[in-house]
Amino acid sequence: MTEFSTRVESISISGIREVFEAAGENAINLGLGQPDFPAPGHARRAAVDAIEAGDADAYTENKGIEPLRAAIAERHAREQGVDVDAGDVIATAGGSEALHLALEAHVDAGDEVLIPDPGFVSYDALTKLTGGTAVPVPLRDDLTLDPAAVEAAITDDTAAFVVNSPGNPTGAVSPQEDVREFARIADDHDVVCISDEVYERFVFDGDHHSPLTYADTDNVVVVNGCSKTYSMTGWRLGWVTASTPRIERMLRVHQYVQACASAPAQYAAEAALTGPQDHVDEMADTFEKRRDLVLDRLEEMGLDVPTPEGAFYAMPEVPDGFVDACLDRGVIVVPGEAFGDAGAGHARLSYATDTATLEEALDVMAGVVVDLG
Image (tube, rainbow, N blue to C red; front, side, top):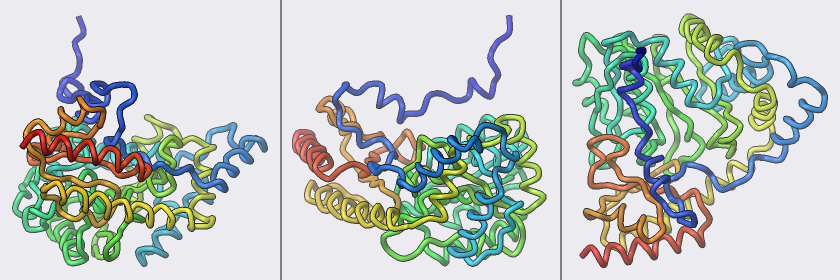
């Protein structure tokens, strides 16, 4: 009888989904990274127009339609001062596929991938699916990734390391000097830096910096997408940017697992990237106000929480039993250990929900903290 592959047996349903499944039907969900904004109207209209014109009926190029890839390249030039050729971009089925391509193209069985701990759940799982070994690198007390810790963890078996700024689940933003160091480490040690930048437009204090800006070699691969920036999670449109040789290898994987990203989503993404950006600015301003509300309330409860400088997550230290007690009272937050062993003793909450609901959930949390003493 055929059994299951060792790779798939090494992963399980994420701890985030486990919490959702345990929650009641009317629970307040602070566990989901889904902005509570509609997608931009001009992006929706572009998809409708493409469908009605028949432009979205057929396969696109494997890499995606050229105008979308040109818009992505122009964005890198505008935001990061880096010249990216449109041919060195692959439109993917969300940032998740982009991560998958980057790891599949660069990691052999037995290779090591350094990942932030706590860090986004896909880093560990997708590394295991390549046959590689995920090596957690604990974060600093402020929940940023320490370049010195990354460099110290590199061995002869290291194929890549993952940088995520602004971060999920932490909301932490790497300062410019750290990002420069990540680029240097990739150059000096000849390992790939996979930079997950899907939250780049949501930085509240300071600026976003990419290792791509500072690298002297082609050892940086950037993953990004429309899901968070344009509240288009359901459209499943991301991209990966790298040097021509790296893109060519990732394309080999992409053409067999996906062929091309959804055509309507590509037209919507092109419009989102090239159209008015006031929608994004409004989202960023709103998330910052909610961030401040969450910080004030958590501090009033006596919980320690590093200030999240970006994204829309906070990760406070919480007393034992906090997550289950919140769940019992109808509020979903995610246990920190779902994101790695170093997340134990913390909880991740998302403030990508309306302020009234957020305040209601924070009232519940305050009661839980009092009851847990």
